[in-house]
Image 1 (cartoon, one colour):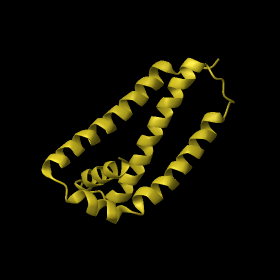
Image 2 (cartoon, one colour):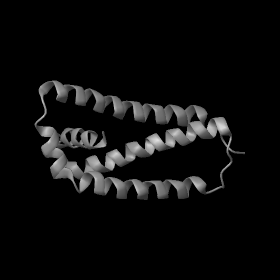
Image 3 (tube, one colour):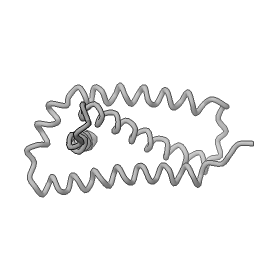
Image 4 (cartoon, helix red, strand yellow):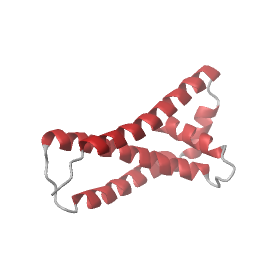
Length: 126
């Protein structure tokens, strides 16, 4: 799933004239969206479970999460970008159309859900 998402992200970014390295930027945005997904899940679980974390837990967990996602996606996506592009560039028109719909659905849904969850479920600490 993320290989195809990476392909679509990179091809969309390649259409931007000022984008010098769409493959790297696609890799970076995929990591960012995955962080949104994990963050949304943590926000929802924390809202219902009422877990109290240590004061700087969010900072350390965010750095650890980003580090892990960057390493995993580097080896799974960025390093194999040539193979991924060869696999998806020869798909049928119908499959490409469906892939783009899934791509935009994932990007928009991930972003919106994260910000809605963060705005409505995160309670301020006193």
